[in-house]
Image (cartoon, rainbow over all chains, first blue to last red; front, side, top):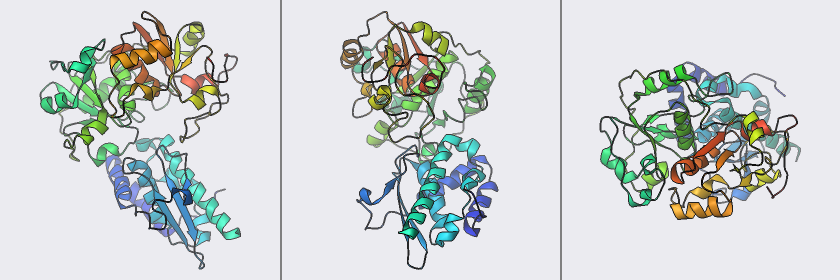
Length: 146
Length: 293
């Protein structure tokens, strides 16, 4: 299901990537990797509370919370030896965390292919990010109907 | 001009000790003319987080593959790539990477298709270099462009295609995937994306030796005796065997190809890079399910 348009924060990230030349895009992805927040205490060391995303090439775990005011909060865990996976998580964190559930659900599934990374990173690797987004949306839907 | 070989005692037992260098050797020879170090990782950004000073990056997915056809780059593409990286035909090329040199071994196998005369692996790869607290840098290397000659790819010696594997049925074959992929219980590596094979199982007669068994805990290759016990003893290969190795897309099996060819000295080992993503989708090829060959 693809619907809606990119929220302004994600749209800005997409624009930032596309304004850069090839090698600089990888540097930007690395910045997102470096800036990925560490897990808060309630999740750190509690992998059982997180959902694994096996579609990523390296281990990635995520948790999704929907607050009473409908704001979505995202938490990710990936090792420093997996900077690409961390970078994808960082983009989703920066672009989606704090938005309303509806805004998160409206994120077009194909946005991952708009970052201009396909040729640099390879489609196989990008599939991991699409899978993360899919799992985030599913968890948001589950949390709302729960 | 080729650099001297590493005379590390452990390497002397191997069939082709000149195909490996130790971290000590690399630390000693770093920066010498005639040497180019290249990092090849599974993660496309790992190099950018820090690499061995002077090392160039070689990406298996975006640089060694043809962008359209499922194949490797051709002679012109390889010459262009090597020239951009500052590698000459007479360069001693030392490859290293993450995950027990998985992707570095793949790059070495591709370089072999083009007959690059002197290409070696750093025993223990990236992990060992880091574990020994050796320096890493984020600085991009400044290597002048070279003029690497166009050499046609030779697919006859170390590469096998599907038809050749059909002809090879009944002869020694090693499936280097995980036991679950081999038996057909899993259609992809544990924790990895499903890459689309419609049938699970293995090629009839192939023995299962997961590729990482060739590596010790510190990521270096196991000693010759241990390797003999695994591939000769358990898998039943005998010297002189013509062997085909395969995995899912030919990357993990490049690692085993390296072990059988250069460490154990089997005279004819071919990597079937079509591997399970081709065989498991092919019409009317035989497949065996379960744990037995």
